Image (cartoon, rainbow, N blue to C red; front, side):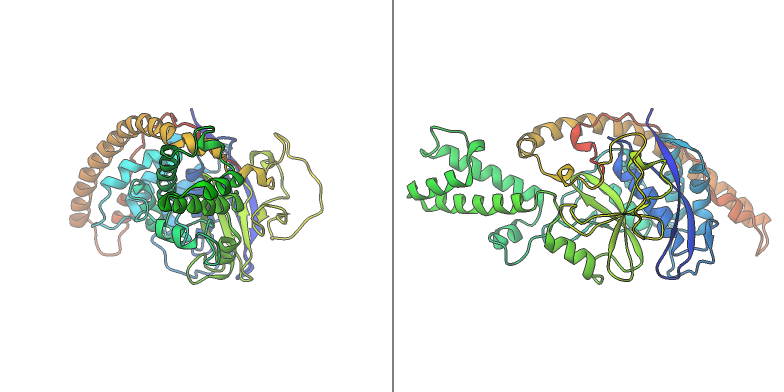
Length: 425
């Protein structure tokens, strides 16, 4: 059964310099990233908006759908050293039901909740840093971010001065790019120029050679475009470009707001990110190897290849204390963890299709269980509300006592392929 370790962190925000103590989820080597990032981001973001029970002298800075009382059961759950997957899904389900407005259609969202523990099919747009459910219609679960006032960002953006900018702008996103690469691949294979070697073996030098040999205008266009695509992919192998990092840091109007938390997506991995008042970015250190460390809490996000990233304490200060992770070798700053495997890209579509088919069967079973419990509780809630309306006087606590639901999210087996697994930052 899938389970998660927890860790206590102490940290200080840079807006009001309030001190916070929170329990967070730790990332296993191949754990369900999105659920971890969602819970951690929700807990930490609430510290900046609520007078939470773990906060010392906090000042509310923004209204939120999620109230302090809504998060108490989740925070109590995280006081355990180990938390089970079904317990987390249960609390997220209850939280969704409590936070959603009466006119909010919960059914599609509840059906998507079992996918929280698997890899989401996120499709980054090369022009837009924010990822929304509207951009990825197959992942209705992303609607939960809007419900919880959380935002999801990536930094795989193209610079307008980059060769191929017009092409990549027209294609828009990663999935469209892969489809176009397949179209180019078929065109080259159908030509008479590649009899002696496979498409996958083509280097940029070989492409130059083919361009010199070809008289076909359309094929020449394909070859030129493929060169631009390969140059872009190889120049941004960590799926974080200089343009993207700069946008995330300095474009607070359209990306991450100052003194706020968000979820950061990079190479099938999700993590909590914080931006301070000085436009610096920090990711939450959730590597299992540092789960016993009382020193390290944050890691700077200051370079696309990790060369300038540093480990910081809870006050966002650099420490020279040298402690080795207890459970495994530290891999947080190794930029090779984010490098794209080009062979995997070629076979990803077939593997992903099989994984999605298997996962869909599991998700549907779990979703039906959640929906049945939700429908049952909705009826009970309606009856209780009717009774409390008759018995309760204005100002009584009857309504608030009945607000908490006890629906239980069914556990789901993780049948995803490697695409659903995560690389730890």
